[in-house]
Amino acid sequence: MSVARKITNDELHIHIKNIKLDGYTVIKDYIPANKADKLKQIAGDLYKDLDLKLNQKAPVGLQHVIKDDYIINNIPCLSSDYLDICTTGDHLEVLKFFLNDPYYSLIPKNDPNFTLAQANLRAGKVSLPFHVDVRLVTPGYESWSYQGYLALEKIEKKSGCLRVIPKSHLLPQMPDSTKEYNNAIDLPLDQGDIIIFSSQLHHATHKCEKDVATPWTLLLTYRSWWCKQQFDFLKMIDPNVFKNLNNNQKLLLGACSQIPDNIYASPSSRQGYEALDSFSR
Image 1 (tube, rainbow, N blue to C red):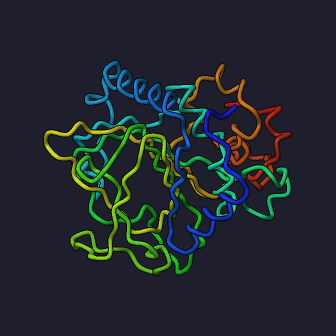
Image 2: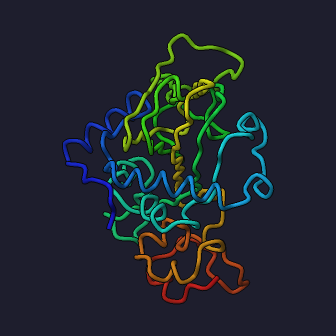
C-alpha cells in the first residue's frame, strides 16, 4: 500500500489540465514528512555504503556535466521503500491519462499499463542547461514519456531547484542548451512535493550554492509499454522481492512487455497478467 496521500478526483482533473496546458503540475504534500525523512536517510546511507564513485558509470552527452553529483541509479532495486514509491500511488493516476494504451485490453482498463523506464536519486551540485529527455519531439502535449521529480527535502533556487519553460512541451523543437531563456520560471518545492511533467518540456536546474547542502530528489521516468526501458529491472531486482509484488507493480517493472527470446513465442510482446504465472528470468 502506497505511503503517498490520495489525490481527489477534482485534484486529478486539475493536474491533467495543468500538464496539457503548461507541461507540468505540482502535487503538494504528496509524501508525508516522516516518510520523506526516512527516504532521505536511506539515500544518504546507501551513498555512503555503496562504492558508487568507483563502480557507477558516469552520464554521457549533455548529462556528463552532473558526473560529480551524488547519484544512485536503479533505486527500486536497492530499497523496498523506493520500490513502493515508484510502483504505487496516485501520481500513476495522473500519468494514466497520458501514457495508458487505450487498446491494451489484456490489462484491466483502470490499471496503469505503462512501464517505469528509470528511477534514480540525485543530489545536484551543478546546473543542468535547458534540455528535454526524449530524442524525438512532436507538437502537442501527447507523448510516450513523462517524468516525476520528488523533493525529499526542501529545494529552492539556492539549492538547485528545477527550472521550466511553461508550454514548451507543445513545441516541435528542442531547446538550445547554450541559451538562457527569459521566459523560464523556477519551481521551488517543499519536502514531499512532486512535479509531474512531460519529457518534452524544456527544463533545467539551478546550481547549488557553495555553502548550501545539496538536497536529495527522486527522479522518475515512465514510458508507454512499447518503449524500451532504460534499465532492465527484471534482471536486477531480488527475485524474492519481485514475487511478493502485486501484478500491476510487476507490469510497471516491465514483466508484461518483455521481448520474447523463444523462437516459438507469440510475436506480441504485450501480455496480460496471466503471463505472470509462467514468468521466468
